[in-house]
Image 1 (tube, helix red, strand yellow):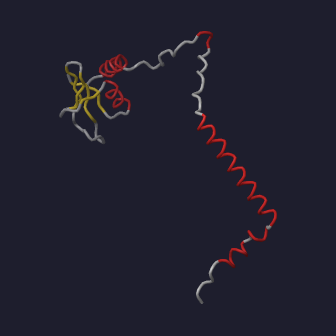
Image 2 (spheres, helix red, strand yellow):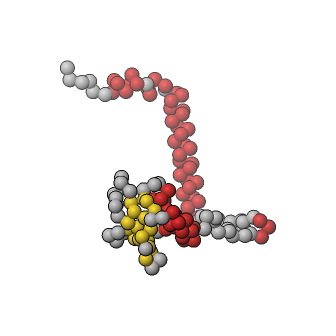
Image 3 (cartoon, rainbow, N blue to C red):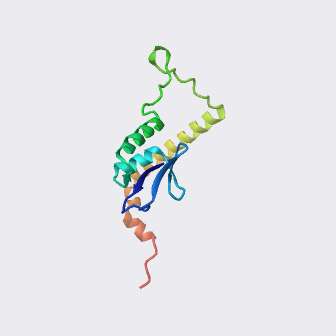
Length: 137
């Protein structure tokens, strides 16, 4: 059954949309959903075979459309989700490594602060320029 014909300005100008055995087709083999056919109609890209086709395709598209609301989520006792379980425990070696690494980082930071406070000029850019070789003249 012919449903509609594509208008000028579409890639399928002059080709028809047909319906056969529950399937919409563009002449030449491309398969369509009822929603796609309805969208072409909404965009005025097709000329309906007759006015009743528009309503019939709309009803068919509505019947094929997935539900618009989300399915209900899980329900929890008291309305609150359960609290997460205990965190995995760290091994003693991992705790020791973390403690030693943090201590070393803190010590390095303290030494850097003390060095800058005691001899601020040794970290200046002038000192660095003297240490760098001069460009060839």
